[in-house]
Length: 286
Image 1: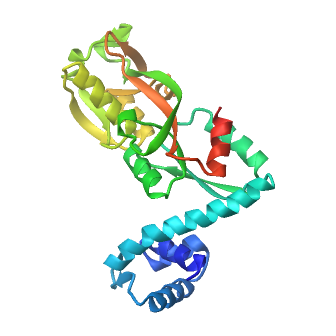
Image 2: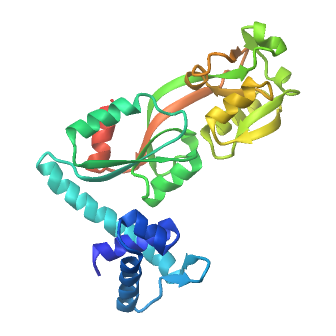
Image 3: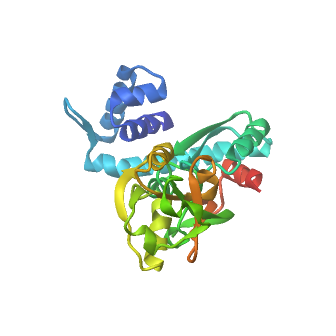
C-alpha cells in the first residue's frame, strides 16, 4: 500500500465522488478509479459503494479513511521534521477561519509565506462547529476563530483578542438617537440571525439567555454582507462584533446598557505538540 493510494481514497471520500476527486488531485478520473480499484483488490475489501447517483463509503471504507488520514499526517510530519532540520517548511497547512474573523491574518500569512515559500496555505472557511470537527478529524491543522472555550475538549486554545459586540440597526429605528439599548426592548423587533453553528449566533444566544430575554428571528443568514443589507433596509436588527459592524458606517451601532456580549478570537489547534507548520503559524500570530 502506498501513500498516494491513501491520498486518492481520502480525496474521493472528502470530495464525494471520483470526478470531484480527480479535479482536486489534478488527474484524470480514470486514474482515480484505477487507483481505488487496485487498492481494494490489494486489501480484499470494497471501500466505496458506487451507484449512478452517488459514491458512499462502505463500513470498511468508514474504518479505512480515518486511518489513512492519520498515516498521511504522520508522513507529512516526518517530511516536515526533515525540512525543519534544514530550516525549510513544505507541504500544505490548512487553516480554518470564518467570515469576519480576519484580525490581521493577511499580514500573518504574508510573513509566513515569505519565510516558507514552499508551504502551501489552504484557507478553510466554515462555521465554528464545522471547523471544530475538522480540527478533531485532521482535515484542519489550525484555526483563527471565535470559539466557546467550554467546547474545546482535545484542543489547545490561545486567546488573541477580545472585543465587544454591538447592535446594528437602521438609523430610522426609534432608539437610533440613544447611545445604548436594552435586551428587553429588542424582543418585539424583527431579528437578523446567523445560522446555528456560527460563532456570532452562539454569542448572541448566550447574551439573551443571560439577560432572560427573547428575540424574534425574522431572517436567518449565512453571510455578513446579506445581514448588513437586511439591516440597512430596516428589515431587522442584528448583533455583530464591533470590528465587523464598523465596516458598515451607514448603520446605527449601539452598545448595551448591561450584559455587553463579547467576541473572543483565538488560535486553536489539536492538543499536543503542534506540527512545524502550525508552530510557525502560531509564532507569527504572536
